[in-house]
Image (cartoon, rainbow, N blue to C red):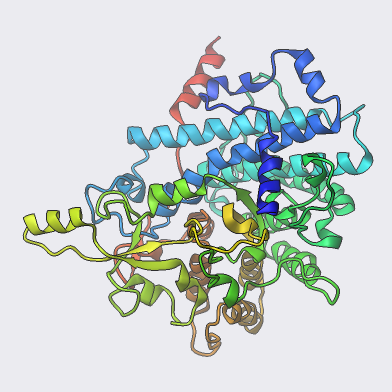
Length: 518
């Protein structure tokens, strides 16, 4: 428990409050009391307090809506649309004009720009005279710039166009200062230019000072003189150098520049993270995934960047818990068994030995479900529940190394392989890359001569990122018009391309109109 408690201590040290506001008010997070601001940034600890506050607040923005829940329902993972009473059905039908959905996406917009406001204060205090050492400045400014790019990229992926079809569509503002002035909505290609510029500077800084390059993720206590001594540890939980490189690969692929995305994925990540001297993100083992009372269904050693959410169990309870009434709230796969052609688990995973199947379990119907079904002359059935974010059991034996206990992954090694596989012009290489993932998931190799490569790529991506909010954006980037169905064991769902573009919140547009008319 020592390591876990140390990570908690780091995050608990974050004192910079990030509130939920309307977008019209988001710049109010800038400290009114300049004396207080100057005091906070008078030493290294103050900088880390501010930056840690951003990391901590990412849990509120991402975990419920941008990783699990709505965003994965929009990717059609779950059997939602056939249940007219399901609480998330409107997300599965892309009813963006509905009041509930408008509120959800307006909150995401406002909260993201609140995070950006806090980041910009930190970034501005790393320019010019400051009390930081060279390495402290490199880490703090590097992480902050990378996070600024990360947040804007996710805003663009959600509210922007299918980029390769309409790169000049006006979409989001790029907030790169703490100014109270409302920034203009920029064309998507200009947003991408600014994202790449922030990432380029972040890369330069972190390449010099990030210990992940030489020491690995450092999920251990390295000093003993207070919580701030650990700020260079637990690199998976911070926007580290390799997270920057993966975000660059994502960004170039989003723009359709496959050659650059491929080069970054292969030469600048895969060739560097595994060497004779150091394996930075080792593949998870069967023993990890099946650990008694504490299964690592995240494959956490492979995670490149992750949230650290001590309230993760609340997300599990909100969407996946067996205590939920399956027909109204729980997100489940189609079917009533873990195997067979009538089960999505049975068809979604094409190999019974696949380690990823371990994150699913069969849940017997609750007594209330049995009674309700009987009253309607029906039979209550078991359901398939995701266990990826379940808490450890009370009898789990902990040794202090279980950083994954509260992790919620945002980036992982397998995505790098899939980017490279999608971008290479060599079909054999694409299969070699994908089969590397399959080998470590204990699956049989896919046969290059008889396998549909595009379908294999899609399914491997879908299998890897359940509960991580990436599949919807994978489909959007590719402009897919047929995607894996959530309402059948083995089928597809038709998509119209307007479903991929979430409208900019009306209150944001109204605020801009008001400013224009002043």
